[in-house]
Amino acid sequence: MKTEFAPLKNDLLLKALKGEKVNRPPVWMMRQAGRYLPEYRKLQSKYSFFERCETPELAAEITMQPIDIIGTDAAILFSDILVVAQALGFDVTIEKGIGPVIHNPVTKVKDIDRITIPDVYDKLHYVMKAIALTRKELNGRVPLIGFAGAPWTIFCYLVEGHGSKTFSGAKKFCFTQPEAAKKLLNIIAETTIAYLNAQVEAGAQALQVFDSWSGLLAPEDFNEFSFPYLKRIVKEVMGVPVILFPKSSWYAFEELGKSGAEGLSIDWTVTPEFARKACGNEITLQGNYDPSHLLSPVTTIKMEVHEMIRRFGVQRYIVNLGHGILPDIPVDHARAFVDAVKSYEEVKTV
Image 1 (cartoon, rainbow, N blue to C red):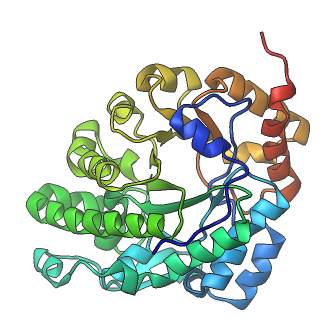
Image 2: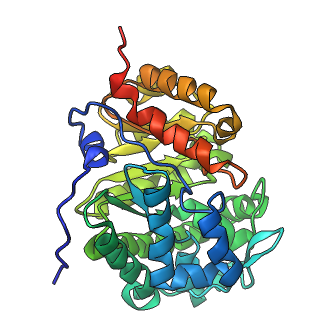
């Protein structure tokens, strides 16, 4: 039986994703629950990264921090895209100065035979409990966004074994063993779909799919190794709007605009005008403020945010960063970003 939660008081995000009229766009920030917040760093000093992810009470507390401190219009669950890799049987650790490391990566075709699609309710039960706890804590203040990594991005880590600027090992596997690569991508996609649907059942009110490394693919390769799995996720995840974030895949905007997703998040390497023209007006755009610009003076942030909204337009738009917030951003500057959006409805534009 699905848990009953408090009615939603601030539904700007959901309205924007549905294409309904709003007085101002909603605002949230990728990685908003993270290292730039002193409150987060206190927990970081006490608990390891995956302890924070796997302890529902901690994950809920961290998810709530930016709602209380900077006042965004949506919460996004504190977790990590590589919990899916763990559920698939991969040994994942976060190494200081390196980032995520897969200790048993896929190096040959027969390695794929050892992978079985998990019961996400068993392997990732702590995520669903964190969602339910967070929804209770939010008490309807703002919607809660769940998320997962896209199959191509998870594939990159599973094959490469660690982060990379090029993921040349993952790409080599695709080009030398394309059928095996697609078998693994399908396993990841099926697991991800089950995982996202479980998040919805637990209480997630919107979902974002992060394809952080899709921009490393040529357009033809994106159409073979990334896009089909994004479309499948959009088609098979039910009940809430889905935002896709295929970072730097600007060449695919026209097709992404027709993918069936309600939202498309974009980075700062494209203009609002290009994105609107390429995507059409049937999908809500999200982004695309360069996180480094949050180091600018507060007055500059406000001016740039207002100009960004003017260029994208108020309707079918969600204000966000073009990628995750950086750890050295002053909290006051993050709050200024949010406050600038909230003040926009008071700005008279021609």
